[in-house]
Structures are given as structure tokens and as C-alpha cells.
Image 1 (cartoon, rainbow, N blue to C red):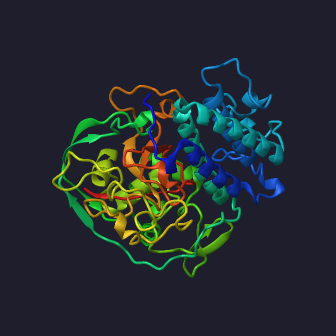
Image 2 (cartoon, rainbow, N blue to C red):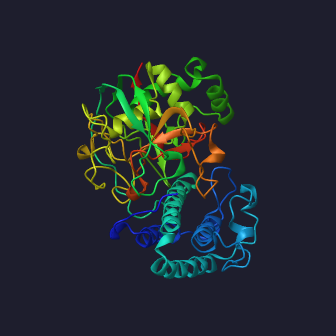
Image 3 (cartoon, rainbow, N blue to C red):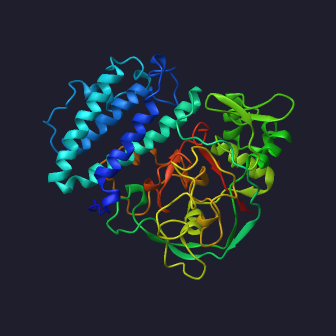
Length: 425
């Protein structure tokens, strides 16, 4: 485990407070019956999720390495330890009321701030806790979508745009896949950079749009087994899907539900809420393929003629802003695929960060020499049965991302903010 170095604006204390402000905003307008909500296998009850955030921060920042130290809440381990509390139990636990839960979070945060001030060595665990909370903020956002709750504050109206078609020729070459040890926080699944050879390939300049995906649906794509793998077809039929999740057609055109409202399908925005199986089927129908995660990182991080010098972000070394990526705080929803031109990669690929997570072809596996970090449940349990996604989405905090970041979901997950970009065969 490497010490974490941050600037003042991204200190662990600042990251923690930014995440907490977002958490509280996401739950501030929940109705009494929405704190638990319906029991589904793809979401957590928001009330449990809120308490889990306090428990996680307390455990790693105050209690790790000291098993005899008790929690500030007497039953916290029995209620909120996600490694020990089965998902199905979380609706029936004797959870504290929302106000009491927020008092627990505030009490933990006060002690953590005190400890950061006097013990900078806990910066690693404080940063881990901040990033963990940001990931749960994204999960709370798509939970609100799944359950049809009102949109979080900050969502803009649809923005006019246009297609961004075509492929980019990418030379290929040898480069180092994964993170380098430069003192900045990275997760264990990014460690460490290792040399790989990439063959030349052609990648789409932008993600697949809603209009492009609608062509597949209208061509009978969801009713034609030959476009689907056997596993994908079984998944589609078991979910009785005839189109992407949240889409509907009233005979006059396509619409989709966005939180608690229905709007015309935005044809030039990237398709979103599609699972890996759906992305695979579209690719087979279109005569395309998903990129490997090695190809994705190569395209995002390298510059023609300079494959030995990786960028931290697709556009360079400078942190994201509204001109480079549609991340949390920019639009609150997807933008058209031609937006954020300043964020083009060195190869001229648009929106490799922001808008939608992008499915890749690969199963989530450890890199050579993988060593588990202290948070054992983050990566290791999911190797082999999850697919890798890259690039972040409109609900991802910019400070979370870098070109080496690896996200991962089961191939049937179509509730998350995922789309896809393709490569030529």
C-alpha cells in the first residue's frame, strides 16, 4: 500500500466532505416510504446505504488495526457490515430512523476530521472512504432511477446536438497497461503497469447513440436469437425484454423514462441502461465488436507516436471541467455524443470520460502480480464473473477517475449508467 499524496483542494478531508454533501443532497427529499423502498436484488434500501457509509468510514479510518475499539453505534457491525449482512436482510433489519442515522454519520465524521488533522498517515483510508462514498452516491442516483423517484437536483433539460460518426485508425504498439506508482491513490485492481502489445485497430469516435440502437430494436433485434450469445438470449428471455430498460413506444415513436418522467428518446445521446449482453448483440447485428479493455486504455491514454508516455486523462494531465467531460455536476444527465470536444483523446476519440460507462469485451481479472489491498472485498470476490467497464458516466465524480480506472458489473446489469463504444472487426 502506497502513501497517498494530494493537493489541498483534493485533500482527503475535502474529498470526504464533498462526497458527504452529495450524499445528503441525494436523500434530503426522500418521502417516508422511500427510505426503504421495494425489495429488489439490484438496489439497497437508501436508509441502509446511508448507515453503511458511516460504518465504512468509521471502520477504516478509526477502527481498522484496532479490533477492540467499539463503534460509535452499538449495533453498527450487525447492521451495516456489507461483507456479513446478506443483501436480502437489509430491508428487515432494525435500522435507526433517518435522523438518527445522519447523527451517526456526523459523529463519525467529526472524529475522522480530528484524526486526519493529527495523523496524516490515515490519508489512504480517508481517501478510500471518500471514493467509496462517491461510488455509493452514483448507486443512489441510479437507485432513484430504478425506483422512479424524482430526479436529483442539478439535472438540466435535454441539450440539442448531432451525431459524431466514424472510426479512428489507432496504430497500436507496446505500452504499459495499468497504473504506475506515483504516490496517488489507486485501487488494487489497477496495479501495476505492465507491458502489453496492442495490434492496430479502428475504434468509433463516440459511443453508440440511442438512434443507432433503436435501429437494432426496430429491426427485430430482441426477437432474433442469432444476434445473441446463448447466455445473452437466456438472459433476454428470462427478463422478457423487447427493448432496453425504461424504453417504451406508443406507436408514434420511442420514449424513455428518466426518473419519474417520460421524455422523447434523445436520439443523439448515447444509449444508456443497456447490459453487456445487449451491447454484444448490437455489435453482432452491426458487424462490430466491443473493444478489449487494453484497447480502450491504449486509445484513452496514449498519443500517436508517443506510446511510452501515458496521459492521466484522455485529454492530458489537467483535471476535468465542463468542457472536457460530462461528469457529476455538469449536466446531471447525458449530453449528445458531439459534446465536450475539448476532452478528445490524443487519437481524436470523444467522451471517453463521462456520459456513460463503456462496456468492454473482457472479464474482470487481476493484473499480473496482483496483491490484495486492505479492503479485501473491493476487487477479489468479483474476478472472473464480472465484465469490465471504463470511462465514468454523468453521475461519476471527476476526482474518482483516471485512465486506468476499472469498473465492473455482471453482464446482465442494465440498471446502471452503462453504454458502449465499438471497434471494427
